Length: 280
Ligand SMILES: [Zn+2]
Image (cartoon, rainbow, N blue to C red; front, side, top):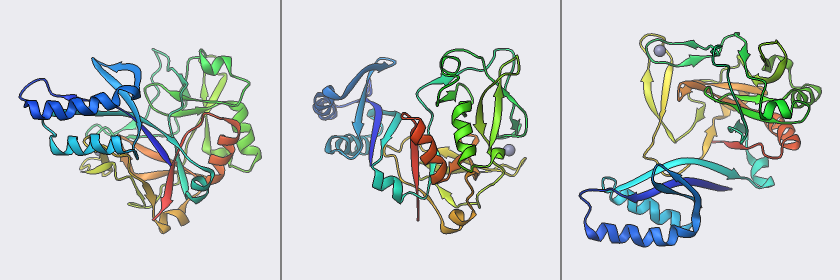
């Protein structure tokens, strides 16, 4: 499995000794050819497989001088071999490269806790502007990320294939235009996996909300590695084709899909990306 991380790396502007600057500069020199050509504020963005020696060096130096070095992990993408896909127990769909937009005057609503901001999906319908990728590919197999909410919208033709293959239609909630045209579907599920059954070591426990009682996780932003996601045996036994985690990650329950769902989507949508979840 190759995990390509996009990140920025440089030394802080103040109070950095020349020895540290020198060490950082040596790595920056080697990183030069991994620049993506884009910048994050003023810093270059690099893209590197986290299993390379160079990335390990970046990690070691940052760990050694967390105050003097500025490191930000921005995003990542995953390359899985067929065998690795086979070995996975489940998958988390990742935000695709195309996106779609909400209307400015219709907010897609979640049931939100006023104390901790976790958002639960109820049966409210979502709306999306009929433009861009989802409009021009309305009759194709495809998917797009929902700008703002982070949901993934599956286009109608793809959902048709999923249902034909035996995936229950209750997992697909239509996303409409103002004229009530079905533009696509988001994945929904009432099947909540047992507490603690899904683990993402990139997240730390933030606590249980006293107001709503939900358990909230927050990303460990200092973590420079993308760590393996796992599911317990109990969690796996509890799994249906579409599931959500008990805990809230970045305010939302994580969506976990079966291998079957992943296989069908990957078959029709070449750019679909999934995070593998392995049984522990
Ligand atoms: Zn709450």
